[in-house]
Image (tube, rainbow, N blue to C red):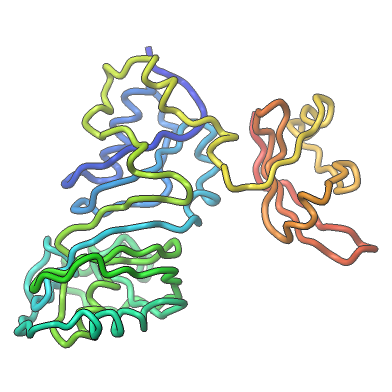
Length: 307
């Protein structure tokens, strides 16, 4: 008997496992195919993977867009085709003595909004095909650069030829590319030899279930403590309570106007964004809100509705 439920499960993925390995294993535990994840981790990487269970799959866009916190170790002096330790060496350079002040100055140029070239060995698509499959076949192509935001970049340690960084960045950032760019800025080249996702939004790897514990023998008691409800899966989102009648109408397909919801200052003063519609701590829907002029009132639209 499976454990049908709706919400999210935090898993600490081990090195060598794929994100889909975690999804496949969870499907065996919950005995359902309605399961996904909110942001891929490369096989060589470890750390937080957010699994989406049942109706939790409807939260994908909201959770995947959240900022991530990573810690990674670079090996200076060696570049690889995959930008990590799984690849083939493409260039080697000597690693001179590095002064911390110089390294910090170079790294400071990567803070803020930057343009980044995604790795050729990635799951992105180029002309309808996965980039990593084309790269393995030796196809010559270049993925378009994308804008990402590096909110913070801390140099944790410098022990040449190794260097460890910690970065909080926008969704879609490739830390492998960031590491390679840092290596080039230092004149040594570099590739990642380890990467760990420490946080996704407000969720932390230290609160996650170790991936080796994700198996069919996982007890209902453990699941009860570990599965995060739909409402608690969006802890940073503004919340508005409705009564039973409105909750029922929304679930039946009704799109309420903002006047019917009578949003208070706590919602309207928050500006554009998303609002959780809740009844007795049960998530009913996620609504987008755009603050217009006082006469027109906010523009609202239900984005996801939950049974």
